[in-house]
Image (spheres, rainbow, N blue to C red):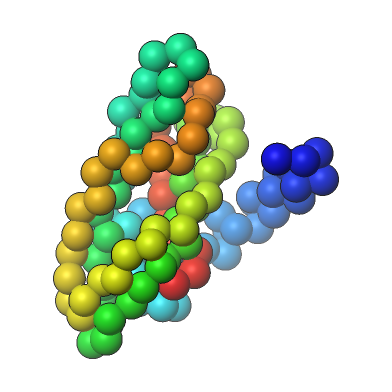
Amino acid sequence: MGIRTAFAIAACLPLLFAASPGLGQENQAGLQVTQASLRPGSVGTQAAITLQILNTTKKAMQDPHVLCQLMDRDGATLGAKTQIIHETFAAGETRTLAHLDFGGIDQKVSSIKCMIVAG
């Protein structure tokens, strides 16, 4: 990631979290993250994230963009990771996606808060 991209993401994080629905809240597309958990790896490894996603619409939804806010034990934000989940969610379906690879994360991260920002 280039320095410009990093600054752009850092500048937009407060706006994204202020305007986007949080855990358990539905976005405009009708998808919501109902549960998110983090399994950190050891030094130099990738962390595995498990998400439960609910489709509240009456139509299939595909390829949601997920934004996860990384937090330390005190609740301070350490950064964020985004990923497109290349899956199709049937109408009314709840699906658990285990061991998603969002890349390496800081060892200080102890919890996450994820949301769908586009669907």
